Image 1 (cartoon, rainbow, N blue to C red):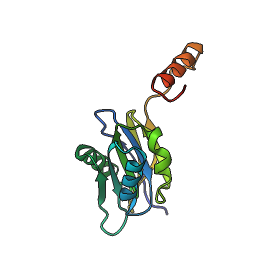
Image 2: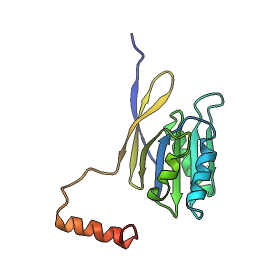
Image 3: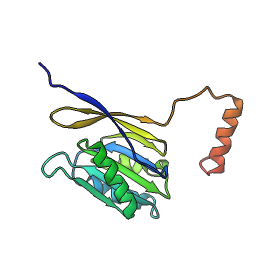
Image 4: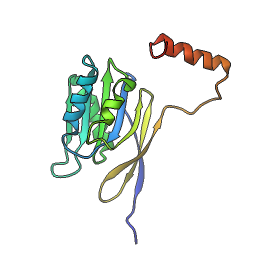
Length: 164
Protein backbone atom coordinates (compact mmCIF):
# COMPACT_ATOMS: atom_id res chain seq x y z
CA UNK A 1 0.00 0.00 0.00
CA UNK A 2 1.21 3.55 0.68
CA UNK A 3 4.29 4.79 2.44
CA UNK A 4 4.22 5.65 6.11
CA UNK A 5 4.37 9.27 7.17
CA UNK A 6 5.00 10.87 10.54
CA UNK A 7 3.86 14.28 11.67
CA UNK A 8 6.38 16.26 13.70
CA UNK A 9 6.56 19.73 15.14
CA UNK A 10 9.70 21.88 15.22
CA UNK A 11 9.77 24.75 17.70
CA UNK A 12 11.61 27.71 16.22
CA UNK A 13 14.47 29.08 18.30
CA UNK A 14 14.06 32.86 18.43
CA UNK A 15 15.16 33.95 21.91
CA UNK A 16 15.18 37.69 21.11
CA UNK A 17 11.77 37.64 19.37
CA UNK A 18 13.30 38.85 16.13
CA UNK A 19 11.28 39.06 12.93
CA UNK A 20 11.48 35.94 10.79
CA UNK A 21 10.19 34.79 7.44
CA UNK A 22 9.88 31.10 6.59
CA UNK A 23 9.24 30.19 2.98
CA UNK A 24 9.74 27.67 0.21
CA UNK A 25 11.80 28.17 -2.91
CA UNK A 26 13.28 25.98 -5.61
CA UNK A 27 16.91 26.64 -6.47
CA UNK A 28 20.38 26.84 -4.89
CA UNK A 29 20.75 30.55 -5.66
CA UNK A 30 17.89 31.38 -3.28
CA UNK A 31 20.16 32.48 -0.42
CA UNK A 32 22.14 34.86 -2.65
CA UNK A 33 19.03 36.30 -4.30
CA UNK A 34 17.31 36.87 -0.95
CA UNK A 35 20.51 38.56 0.25
CA UNK A 36 20.30 40.97 -2.70
CA UNK A 37 16.58 41.57 -2.13
CA UNK A 38 17.17 42.41 1.52
CA UNK A 39 20.02 44.91 1.06
CA UNK A 40 18.35 46.52 -1.96
CA UNK A 41 15.10 47.02 -0.02
CA UNK A 42 16.40 48.10 3.42
CA UNK A 43 20.10 49.00 3.08
CA UNK A 44 20.80 49.06 6.86
CA UNK A 45 19.04 45.79 7.65
CA UNK A 46 20.95 43.14 9.61
CA UNK A 47 19.96 39.60 8.66
CA UNK A 48 20.81 35.98 8.08
CA UNK A 49 19.16 33.65 5.59
CA UNK A 50 19.53 29.89 5.27
CA UNK A 51 18.29 27.64 2.46
CA UNK A 52 17.89 23.85 2.66
CA UNK A 53 19.24 22.35 -0.55
CA UNK A 54 17.08 19.35 -1.58
CA UNK A 55 19.40 17.46 -3.95
CA UNK A 56 23.08 16.84 -4.78
CA UNK A 57 25.04 17.99 -1.68
CA UNK A 58 21.89 18.67 0.42
CA UNK A 59 23.52 21.34 2.56
CA UNK A 60 22.05 24.28 4.42
CA UNK A 61 23.32 27.26 2.39
CA UNK A 62 23.82 30.44 4.41
CA UNK A 63 24.13 34.15 3.53
CA UNK A 64 23.68 37.41 5.41
CA UNK A 65 25.52 40.36 6.87
CA UNK A 66 25.39 39.50 10.58
CA UNK A 67 27.20 36.42 11.90
CA UNK A 68 24.82 35.80 14.84
CA UNK A 69 21.76 36.07 12.61
CA UNK A 70 23.35 33.80 9.98
CA UNK A 71 23.98 31.21 12.70
CA UNK A 72 20.41 31.50 14.04
CA UNK A 73 18.96 31.14 10.53
CA UNK A 74 21.15 28.13 9.77
CA UNK A 75 20.31 26.37 13.04
CA UNK A 76 16.56 26.86 12.53
CA UNK A 77 16.66 25.80 8.87
CA UNK A 78 18.62 22.69 9.84
CA UNK A 79 16.14 21.91 12.64
CA UNK A 80 13.32 22.09 10.08
CA UNK A 81 15.37 20.11 7.50
CA UNK A 82 12.70 20.23 4.82
CA UNK A 83 13.82 20.44 1.22
CA UNK A 84 13.84 23.81 -0.51
CA UNK A 85 12.80 25.89 2.49
CA UNK A 86 14.42 29.13 3.53
CA UNK A 87 14.61 30.75 6.93
CA UNK A 88 15.23 34.49 7.17
CA UNK A 89 15.85 36.36 10.42
CA UNK A 90 16.26 40.14 10.58
CA UNK A 91 16.98 43.18 12.75
CA UNK A 92 16.31 46.84 11.89
CA UNK A 93 13.46 45.93 9.54
CA UNK A 94 10.02 44.39 9.68
CA UNK A 95 8.54 41.78 7.32
CA UNK A 96 6.20 44.47 5.94
CA UNK A 97 9.34 46.29 4.70
CA UNK A 98 10.73 43.31 2.76
CA UNK A 99 7.93 40.85 1.96
CA UNK A 100 7.14 42.24 -1.49
CA UNK A 101 10.83 42.05 -2.46
CA UNK A 102 11.16 38.52 -1.07
CA UNK A 103 8.02 37.37 -2.93
CA UNK A 104 9.50 38.83 -6.13
CA UNK A 105 12.64 36.67 -5.90
CA UNK A 106 12.15 34.29 -8.86
CA UNK A 107 12.89 31.16 -6.81
CA UNK A 108 10.39 31.91 -4.03
CA UNK A 109 7.26 29.74 -4.28
CA UNK A 110 5.51 30.24 -0.95
CA UNK A 111 5.69 32.14 2.33
CA UNK A 112 4.60 30.17 5.41
CA UNK A 113 4.90 33.00 7.92
CA UNK A 114 6.37 36.42 8.61
CA UNK A 115 6.36 37.15 12.32
CA UNK A 116 8.14 37.87 15.59
CA UNK A 117 5.73 35.61 17.50
CA UNK A 118 6.66 32.19 18.87
CA UNK A 119 6.45 29.76 15.92
CA UNK A 120 6.14 26.02 15.59
CA UNK A 121 6.55 24.40 12.18
CA UNK A 122 4.39 21.37 11.38
CA UNK A 123 6.41 18.82 9.41
CA UNK A 124 5.43 15.70 7.48
CA UNK A 125 8.26 13.16 7.22
CA UNK A 126 8.51 9.97 5.18
CA UNK A 127 11.29 7.85 3.65
CA UNK A 128 12.02 10.49 0.99
CA UNK A 129 12.35 13.45 3.35
CA UNK A 130 10.47 16.24 5.07
CA UNK A 131 8.01 18.94 4.04
CA UNK A 132 6.35 21.84 5.82
CA UNK A 133 2.59 21.45 6.14
CA UNK A 134 2.09 24.75 7.92
CA UNK A 135 3.00 26.80 10.95
CA UNK A 136 1.52 27.72 14.29
CA UNK A 137 2.18 31.45 14.60
CA UNK A 138 1.63 33.02 18.01
CA UNK A 139 -1.40 32.36 20.17
CA UNK A 140 -5.16 32.18 19.49
CA UNK A 141 -7.45 35.22 19.86
CA UNK A 142 -9.14 35.82 23.22
CA UNK A 143 -12.04 37.89 21.89
CA UNK A 144 -13.38 40.11 19.14
CA UNK A 145 -12.22 43.71 18.73
CA UNK A 146 -14.51 46.37 20.19
CA UNK A 147 -14.38 50.16 19.73
CA UNK A 148 -11.60 50.48 22.32
CA UNK A 149 -9.56 47.77 20.59
CA UNK A 150 -10.09 49.47 17.24
CA UNK A 151 -8.91 52.80 18.65
CA UNK A 152 -5.81 51.15 20.18
CA UNK A 153 -4.96 49.46 16.85
CA UNK A 154 -5.30 52.69 14.89
CA UNK A 155 -3.28 54.66 17.46
CA UNK A 156 -0.50 52.04 17.42
CA UNK A 157 -0.21 52.05 13.61
CA UNK A 158 0.09 55.82 13.59
CA UNK A 159 2.57 55.82 16.46
CA UNK A 160 4.95 53.50 14.59
CA UNK A 161 4.55 55.45 11.34
CA UNK A 162 2.53 53.03 9.19
CA UNK A 163 -0.57 55.24 8.99
CA UNK A 164 -1.14 58.99 9.10
